[in-house]
Image (tube, rainbow, N blue to C red; front, top):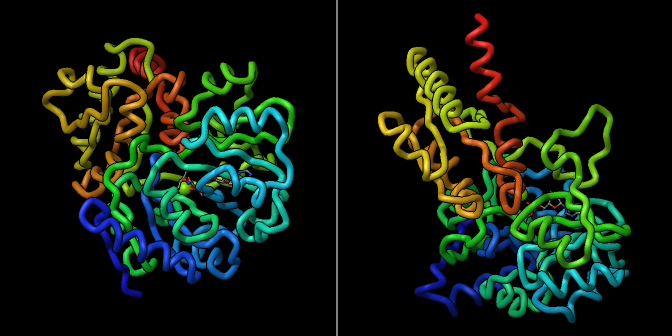
Amino acid sequence: MKTEIYDLKREYERGMNAAAQAIASGKLAIFPTETVYGLGADALNPEAVAKIFAAKGRPQDNPLIVHIADFSQLDLAAAEIPPLAKKLMEAFWPGPFTAVLKKSDRIPDNVSAGLDTVGIRMPASEYARELIRRSGTMIAAPSANRSGRPSPTLARHCIADMQGRVDVILDGDAADYGVESTVCDLTGGIPLILRPGGITAEMIKREVGAVRVAEAVLGGLKEGEKAASPGMKYKHYSPNAKVVIVKAERTESLAFCMNMLYDKDVAEGKRPLILCMDALDRLFEKKAHCCIGADERAVAHGFFDALRRADENGFDQIYFQATSVGGMGLAVMNRAIRAAGFDVICAEDFMREISEK
Ligand code: TXA
Ligand code: MG
């Protein structure tokens, strides 16, 4: 399949119309949002939706998010809107917040992967909302990466993964947040965060007084445990390089541990890379390292791109400095832990073990 690629800064009308035309005629179009790029199809057309799963290589039991342009489309997608859900949607839409609600019969079963709920999001990106309007429908869209790969925050990531597999790619520059939306189950009493994102637990709590975070957000699923969100159970966000998270109470232990691991790898002929926050730049001056940002929000913005660039530059081992789990840190660590396949080293434990040897 030939993929048409449009730079929205230079050819807005042509690009928008080509993508809207593609969606309206049951084809696939990749479009920018404020979180990550989405791979869209007409949410009301099950044959079109099926193409998303094929193009991504996505497991059939992982449901898609339905993207709407305004509140008038909400009733088409959701069967029931509890008052608390309404309050949160009004507070956080348009924005990186996905409301899981009882689904209306109009949403095909392959969108929700057979669940009786559906994730709905009104993106903040003007590009995304204009595309939905011009398509004349709602757009079902997962992140526009090949299944299992880091999510795309730049058009170039989408081209690398999806050229030849979709009809249109719209280049709308770097995604603002860099991590996917907060997925929040609003069907019960207290909102339950299934996947953390740009709308933080703290923000939700401030709005409605209480919030819960699914245990699987920072842990894995236990043997036999059913995933509240099917996306929880898959290997995710993985570059080719092996990722290990290093967490530490003190900067000195972090530096010591990272340096030891790094030197050992080099001695073994590997090519390690340290991914850290800006404040640690000086500590790793003589080592291959990349500073992703000064705070959690900046790390979220640069995280997926840093993983992809590590691959492009031939690194085979990544040591990632754990962030806090407050605010957007929870979203960062949720992605990082999955990218690392739950491989987390505590620097203080590591030092203790070495000194006991
Ligand atoms: O920011 C985003 O959410 C991006 C952009 C394109 O909007 N989309 C995105 O989609 O990240 P995707 O498919 O990569 O991730 C959707 C997540 C998955 O973990 C899925 O399991 C969960 O949302 N999800 C979708 N519908 C659900 C439902 N009805 N119940 C529970 N989890 C659901
Ligand atoms: Mg995804």
